[in-house]
Image 1 (cartoon, rainbow over the protein chains, first blue to last red):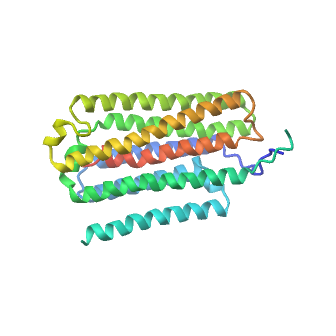
Image 2 (cartoon, one colour; image 1 turned 180 degrees about the vertical axis):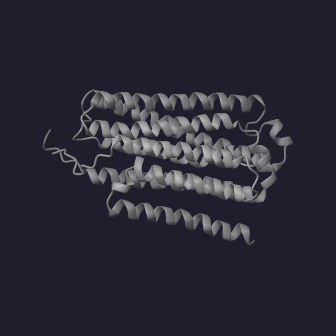
Image 3 (spheres, each protein chain N blue to C red; image 1 turned 90 degrees about the vertical axis):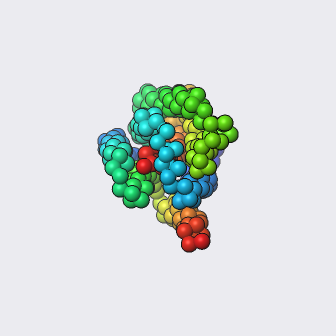
Length: 95
Length: 199
């Protein structure tokens, strides 16, 4: 039996809406990057990029419709990455 | 053939575990970027200004659209519309090629201007600038390699769908290749602002 147990079908319109949101966010990133905000620029850029990747993971990659195992393991991976980044910068910034 | 056992959840979980290792791989490169940005803020801005925002923006649009196409191709297959699945997969594969052609022209222009690792021109510039271009080539190069692999995977899936081996009841190959392709998009979402839009 090769039948797949998950039957959730995401509609085309959902994907198109997400794509439009991603395009709008890209335009915002480019527009904001042309304004000098000092160090704030990098944080705005990273913030928008995080929102965009959240949309890609949740909808395009189906994470919104997955079970607890996948969600928790994604969370663990992101926490691991955050620890790497956090501890590196504890060293770099307060040396 | 109906007796073949397929562990669908296991296959997808395995793919995700692999993607996590990819996330940490690129995460390491972004940490390097962050550390050197902290050390050479002015040089990074100056070097980043050399990159062509148009190339970066066009490639962003290409990747976002290709991600849309591959996501929709799964819906099409689930609904039993094999023709549309193949069209959407073709769009994704074409996007991968467009991305690589853009990258070729972009890198050629940089190399033509003497901006390549260990070039005499880079050695004359401030250390921060050559670090920026070193990271630029490693990160976009590794990302480009993922585009090549992702495109090849999707081309293989295209053949599988056309021959009917991947179909509405068994499409984990399409789904996992799609996940890999979305990861390529995901990484680019961070590369674009950090390298091309830095001010």
